[in-house]
Every structure is written in C-alpha cells, then in structure tokens.
Image (cartoon, rainbow, N blue to C red; front, side, top):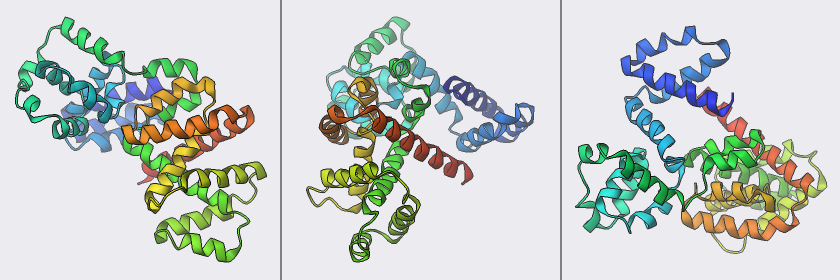
Length: 311
C-alpha cells in the first residue's frame, strides 16, 4: 500500500470514529478487500477516544511538514528561545507524547506563561506560516527525502519513535546472531548468558536461520560488534546500538538526506551516535553491500509490522 493511500485510509478511519467505534466498523465491508484489514487496524488503534486528537495532529502535519515526527529533544532546544505564544502554537500542533515531553523539560518561566488552548488554536494564518518557516529551516523535510530515495525504503520514515526503537533492537539481535555464526559452542554459550532468556532464544534461533548468509556479511557483522563493544553499556542498550550500526551501514554518502531524516527522529544523544557510526562506514560502503543492507532492514521492518498486526 502506497504512503498516500495509507494516509487517506487513516483519515477515513479517524473521521468515521467520530460517529462511534461500532458505526465505524460497519464501514469496513464497503472498502476494497485489500484495504479492509488495514482499516480495521486503524479503528482498533484509535478507537480508544484518541481519534479527534490524532486527526488534528494529522491535519497539522500538512501545515507543519513532519514536525510531529521529529524527536521532541530537537524541538526543545529551539523552543527555549521562543516566546510563550509561539510555544503555545507549536504545542497545539503536536501529538500528546511530544507535548508532555516538552512541558516536562521546558523552563518553568515559559510554561507558566503559555496561552490557554483557545488562544493557541485561534491564531492568524500568517502567524502559523511564520512559525512553520522558522522551525522548518532547522530540519530536513520528509517530503524531500522521499524524492531522493527508493520508494520501498520510504516506510522507515513513517515509523513512529517507538517503532523505530523496536526496529533497532530487532536488527541488533540479528546483527549479533550473524556475528556468532561459526563460533565455538562454549563461546556462544558465554555470549548468550549475558542476555535475557527471551533475547538469548531469539539470537540462537537466528544463528541457525542465517547459516547460509554470505561470508562478507558475517564478517561485517563481527566488525559491527567491535564498533559498539568499546565500553560496558548493558545488553539492551548494546543491542539497540548494534541495530543503529546496521542502519548506518545501509546508507551511502549520497544518502545524506535519508541519514538526516532518520537522525532527527531520534533523541539527540542517540542521533550523535548514529552520526559517528555513519561517518565511520559511509566511505567504505559499496553498492552491493548497501543494497543488501537496505533489503535486510526492510525485511525486518515488514516482519515487525506483520507481527504487530497479528497481535
């Protein structure tokens, strides 16, 4: 399903929920067969009363490009320099999680002067344009990224922060599994004992699953482990950073726009790590290896999405 079609289906679902979840579900049978399951997923996801808020955020996204998709840590530094009225306008156009983060981290001298909801909602179009342009110059437009990258890789830009984090973690499990193929059994046991049982089982499963992968891929995964394993950071963070290395290795120098788009979706501290890893590998990235990495990431992304829809 194309990005625009997914967006249109989401709008239909959110609008139908304004009449109630039961009435909205009655709409499913009138949709094309290929769209029915996707619409059901939307209705289940937003049928908890959050439809109106998400519809407003979706509409705001057109005026504020990909602002709701940018990690609030980046917005925090910018908003600290703005007036309470401008901050109020921006918060009005953000999802609740981002608003909560910003309200918790903005200086109290600013939050105490924020305009009320009505004042923040009814602002002149000209002011909205000024605020949008002021913020936009600091970020890469998601639309620009889609114009310069293969269409099938676009779906990674549509991932929410928690989904992106889940992808990094899952890629970390696979990258570690690749690195352990052909390891002696005692060594494999020592490594697996450092992880939670569920993760250890996944790693062992993937060690068996990836036996036929190319030799250069296994060697490259071992190097990934060396890149991350320079300090003691704990198993969960280790796997997440290992996934970050995996994504960095999927981008060539000409993929800089893609790199910037992904970077601004992450917390600033994680984004700095991502930049470091990408700078270490980008000049050595051959077309064949990068293509393999992109396919590898998309396979993981699609599987995670399927598992999510099944739950």
